Length: 64
Image (cartoon, rainbow, N blue to C red):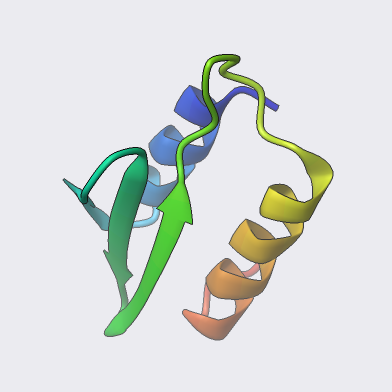
């Protein structure tokens, strides 16, 4: 899954995204905070990171 799609999902759900140090990306959504690492040099997110994103979305109250 391309990282840009994940960022679009955060924004569509009302999330705020800010740049951290290096490849870190901070996300605030529904009062919850998380830090993710933007994949590089490739732009495809690995399965482990997608699982972390899913868990964060669930904890923030974003459901299907």
